Amino acid sequence: MNLPPSAPLSGADDDAILGQLAAWLDEGRDVALATVTKIWGSAPLPVGSHLAVEAGGAFVGSVSGGCIEGAVISSALETIADGKPRSLEFGVSDEQAWQVGLACGGTIGIFVERVR
Amino acid sequence: MNSKLFRALQAFRAAQCPAAMVTDRTTGVQALVTADQVSGELDLGEETLAGVRRLLAGDASGEVDGLFVRVYGPPWTLVLVGAVHIAQALAPMAALAGFAVKVIDPRRAFATASRFPGVELIVEWPNEVLAATPPNARTAVVTLTHDPKIDDVGLIGALRSPAFFVGALGSSRTHARRKARLVEAGFTDVDIARIAAPVGLDLGGRLPGEIAASIVAELVGARHGRPRQRP
Image 1 (cartoon, each protein chain N blue to C red):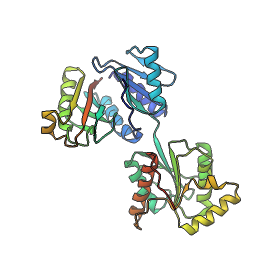
Image 2: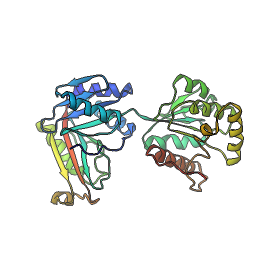
Image 3: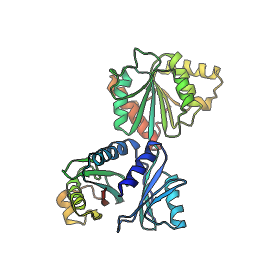
C-alpha cells in the first residue's frame, strides 16, 4: 500500500541544503544526507525534508524542527564512517525518542545515506 | 547516494526540470527519474516507474512499492514589481518562506545592488520581462510601486499567465481606478478578480516590515490552497 503523498516542499530550502552539500563535496569532505521518509500523526516537517551532515559535525537543514537532530547527526556520522545507509524511526513509543525530545506526538521515519 | 547521481540531480534542479530520487532503503541503491529519463543502478519495473512518475507529476514525495520517492519539483518564484522600500523587507522574508525572489524595476536609481544585496534585480520594464519569461503556475507576481505606469504593465503580464497568485499594493480607491484601466485594456471581471488587492492579510500593520509580513502570509496561504477571502 502506498502512503498518501506529502504536500509540495519549497525549492528554496533544497537550494540551500543541497547547495551546501555540493560545496562540501567540492572541498573533498565526507558527507551524509538524512531525509524524512515517513511521518505518522503530527510531525513538524513534511516528508522529503533534508538534513545534510559533514564529517566534522557541521550540518544544514532539518528533519524535525530540532528535537531529534542530535540523534540523527550521530547516525549520519556513523554512516559517513562505515558507508552503510541507516533507516531510523523516532516516535512516542520509542524510549530514546522521548529522551531526545520528540514531544510533538508523531512518529518520523528517516533515511540516512553517505554521499560520495 | 552516488555523487554522480547527486550531481545529476543538481543539474536537473538547476534546469528547473522536475526529478525524483528513488531509494531502496535496505541497500541504499537509487534511481533518478524525470518525465523522460531514468539513470542510476536501481532497476525499476514498468509499473513501479509509472508509479514514480505519478508522484513526480503530482509534485509529491512518498512511497511506491516499498521504495522511497523524493520528488524535487520546480521552485516557487516571487516576482516583485518595484524595487521600493517594502520590497527591501519583502524580498528576504519571502526567500526565507521558500520563494526564489526576483525584483523588477525599470528605474535604475531604485534597483541597485546596495539596496537589495543578494537579490536578483532586473532593471527593465515588467511587461518586457514577463513576456520574455512568462510566470508559470508556481510563480506569484506582486506589484508594489504605486505608479500605474509600472504596476499596470506588470499586472497585465501576470494576468496573461497562469501565475498562482497576482497581488497589488495600494488602497481600495487606487484599486477601483486600476480596475477601470484594466477593463479599458480589455480584461474581464473574472480576470481582474484574480488580483489580490490590497495585497496582504489584514493585520493592521503599517511599517514596511509589517506589510511585508502580511504579504508573505497571504502568499504562503495561497501556495497551500488557503487563499484569503476578500469581501
